[in-house]
Length: 189
Length: 189
DNA sequence: GACAGTCGTTCGGTTTGACGAACACTACGG
DNA sequence: CCGTAGTGTTCGTCAAACCGAACGACTGTC
Image 1: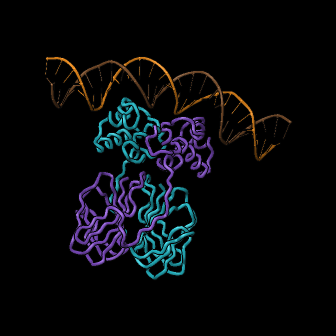
Image 2: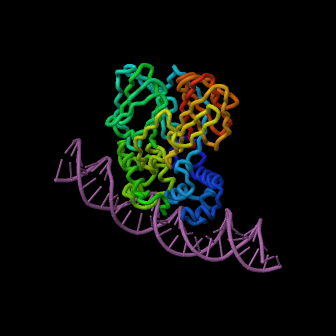
Image 3: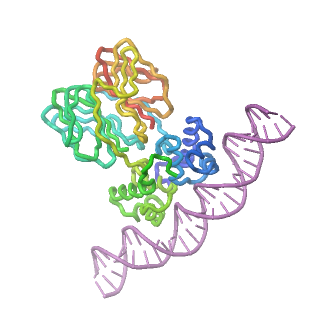
C-alpha cells in the first residue's frame, strides 16, 4: 500500500484524528454518533483510536451522520497567502483571439475546483466542449457584458450577475462589450 | 445503513461505476491498476462488479493509483443552471454599513465551499473573526480598490487582482474606493 | 495450429472488520 | 449510600474483505 509521496502521516491516523475532531466539533458523544450512523460504538471507538482499516460504508455512514463530506475525513489541508496581480498568469494561460483565462488557484491535490480569471473581447464567442461528468461551473461577471451558460440556453450577464450550470454539456462565453472580465469557478466535485 | 435522503442509488454501486469509469478513462486494464495500487485483481474485480464493502485503504490505494481524489469515487454530482442578478441576494444577505455579502452558491451538501459576491463602501473596514481550521478564502477584486487578506499583512488589490489566504486567522476587507466589489470563494475543505 | 500474452472472472484459505455484551469510570439525584 | 444514566473502553463471535492461484476467453505471432 502507500504508493503516495514519502513521509505519509498514515491514512488511518488521519481518519482517526479527523473523525474525532469532527465529532467533537459537532458536540456529540461517541455513543450518540454511533447510534445516529447506525454503527456499533465499539467499531467507532476502534476507528477513532486508529485501529484497523474501516469499510467505506462504515465511514460513509459516519460522515453523513456528521454532516460532513467524505473527503473531510481523509485529507487535512494546509494553505498559505498568495497574491496574483491583474496582469500575471502563472499557469495554464489560455489565450485565443482576445480571450484570456488565467488559472488563479489550481486544484490543490484534493480539492476539486479550479479558479480562473477570464477576460474577453466581443465578437469572439468561446464555445467549450463538455467536460467530465460531474463538473460544475460558476461565473460571476466582473465588468462588461457577456452571454454565458449552456450553449442551448445561454444567459446574458451584467456586472455582478452570477450563473451556474453543469459543465458536462457544451457551454459558451461570449463577450458583448469591450473590457469584459469574469471570475470562473470550475468544480470537478 | 443509508440514513441519507430516500431513493439512494446505493453507495457501493456508485463506487463501482466511478471506479470503472475512472479506470477506463485512464486507459489502463484491471490487472494493471491492481498491480499499480498493490491490491489483488480479484479484489478489484469484485469491487467493480459492485460486490461488498471495500476497505478505505483499498479504495485509497486505487484512487491514488488512478490519480484522482477520494471523493471522485463516492459522490456523483447533479447540478442545474441557476442565475442570480446583480441586485438579488437570495440567502445570507449580510449588510453592515455599506458592506453587502450575497451568498451565491452555498455548500451543496458535499462540496465544502461558499461563493459570495461582496460590495463595500470605503471607510468601513470589515474585520472577520477566524473561521474553522482548514478554511481557505479566495478573493478576486472586480472593481474599485481594496485592502484584503490576513489582518496582520493585508494586500492592496486592484481590479482583477487575486489573493488567497488561510481563513482560520483574523482577516480583513477594506474598500479603498467607491463602488468596490469582489468575488469571494470560501472553502471549508 | 500451437504457443505465449493479456484480458477479466471465479474459487478456497487466511486475515480482519463489524457487531453485541460486558466492562470500568464519572456525574447526578433520591 | 446506592441506583440510574451517561461516557468510552475491551472481549468473543461471526461474517466478509483481501489475497493467491487457477480458470476460460480472446489476441497476435511464429
